[in-house]
Structures are given as structure tokens and as C-alpha cells.
Length: 184
Image (spheres, rainbow, N blue to C red):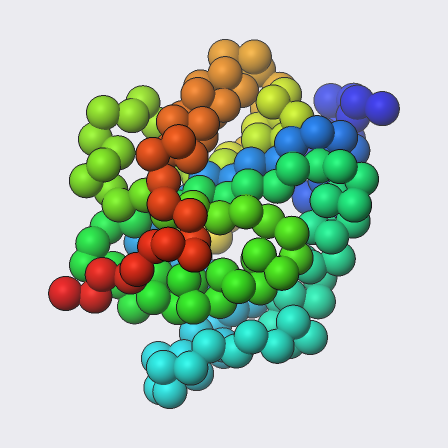
């Protein structure tokens, strides 16, 4: 059942995903995220070079069941990341923990930024659910959530832009298993 306008603005992402029936795609375009729920794991990774791949730690106990439930309902979940090379330490970390995204049921691809120059992209990262609902993400310059961290819309033009951008990035992207992190 589609969410009404009020529910669109007040629903949690879990509720939005529960209302998704076909596709959930996520495009990430930043080289650094500094969101609090992964700060400890990221700091440990910087110290040791070893990712925490325990699905019972950090933000994974909340995320993995959401993805697994959606995938079990037939939702195809894909995530694409546009990244600069050589990669930042954060992207090295993100690449190292991506096996947990895959374990949950997501498919992930990486696109070096130099291959994205001719792709029309929205100005912000986003989730596109069932090709109809866009949740844009707003971050500060340092990569933390901005005060207005998300913006949702069902505007057909915004959804079409996000769909076209994501599919182009996806088609040009390298599957996670084949992407080698370029560190220098």
C-alpha cells in the first residue's frame, strides 16, 4: 500500500523498505562518510587494517535483517559506489566490509569516478525504492549527516533522473568481487 504524504515524511527507512515490492537501489558518491554508527569500527580498521566482519556488531544487526527480509519478499537490492582513485582510507574500509552487504543479500558495484564524467548525476546520494520513491541523503563537508539528513520525494522527474543515473553507473560499474582497491 503506497504511503501517504504525511507517512512519507515520518516513516523510518525500515518502514519505507517494508513497503517496497520490487527494487531498492542505492547510489553513493562520496569518498568519505563520517557517520557515527560506524565510527568505532572505522577507527579500529585504521589502527589495524582489519575489518570487523561480525554481523552482530556495529550497525549490522539493524541493517542485515532489513535487507534479508526485503530480498526474501523478492526485492532486488543493489548498491553502486562512485569512488575516486587512489581511494581514501574510508573507501578502503567500506570495500573491506562490503562482504557483509553481500551476505545480507545486496549486490554491489564500484565505479571509478574517472569513468563517471559523462553520466548525469543528482547532487546527492540516494535510495530509489520501486522506481517511485527517492530518499536523498544530505551530508556535511566532513561526511557526517547534515541537520536535514534526508529528503524524500515521489516526484516522477526526480525518480527518473535517479533511475537513469543509477542504471548507467550500474552498467559501467565493476562487481565487488572483481574490483581491486587502488591505493596509489
